[in-house]
Length: 256
Image 1 (tube, rainbow, N blue to C red):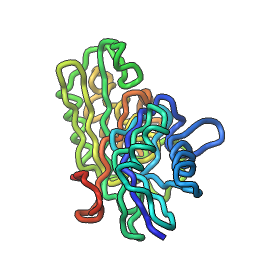
Image 2 (image 1 turned 90 degrees about the horizontal axis):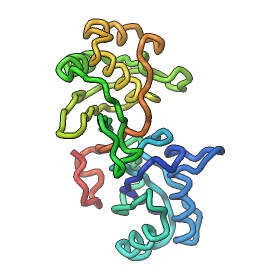
Image 3 (image 1 turned 90 degrees about the vertical axis):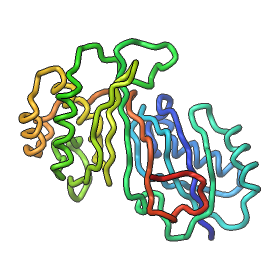
Image 4 (image 1 turned 135 degrees about the horizontal axis):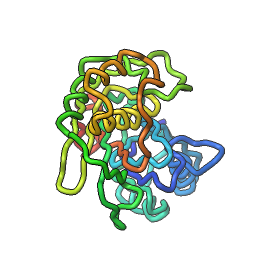
């Protein structure tokens, strides 16, 4: 039995999230069905993490196990991309050690949330249109406080089956670009709905509805009702998944 990693990206607009579920088409389901058809054997992929309905991934990893040789990899990737819908693209497939796990071997995930003030017909479903003026410096002052804390229960969806609410946040900052505002956040793990709730609460800070001290009070409350509403999924991208150096030796991708 050989384990393979897949590096892929997808536009989440047309999918009900990553994970297979009974009420809609998921990215995982489409990958399973396409790989099974192409390789003429049952294939089941395991992702590095789950993304909600409408959330995108510019970099996602998954693994699958299979017996026997695969076709020539470049041609396999080419043929799979011809079979997959436009919203999913495979970039690399490469062998890894049997103990390397797409989810449990990952050391960090990095997300971006994109906000625009004006509608663009070319970017529909890829950003959140939010017109109010924002104090970005104040939002960054609040975001910096995230690095001083570890319990983020206030920003987790209520019905979440987890053992604890602790995350180690390594980066949290806003970047003003010419035509958009981008929130960058990187951590060793994320809670269900955490990034979208964080962004919604930081937008309240940026509008003057909440002070930085009040934002810290929200973190310390460990209560979802203390935080603000979650922003839409359309602006959220899983941007990078990191693994220990040398773990993905078959990949040409940098995982900084």
